[in-house]
Length: 94
Image (cartoon, helix red, strand yellow):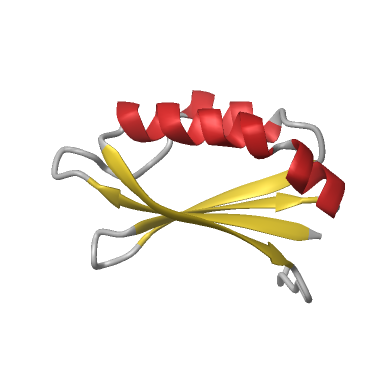
C-alpha cells in the first residue's frame, strides 16, 4: 500500500474540511483505498490518501493534482506540500 500526504494552510474563512464531492472524486480514482482529512491545532490540515499499489499512486497523480488545486481554491487553502510514502504497516482496531 502507498500513501499521498498533502499539507494545506486553510484561510481564515475555511474549515479545512473537504466537500462530499471532493471525497467522492478521490475515492472514485482507480486503486484508491481510502482518504483521511486532518486539521491540526495550528490550523494546518492534511489529506492522506491510500493506494493499493505504486502503479495506482502514480496513475492517480494527474487527477489528484487537479482535484487538489480545485479544492484548495474553493476552500481558500494554500497547498504547502505533497509527499508520497510506502505504507510499511497498518493496524486499526475494530
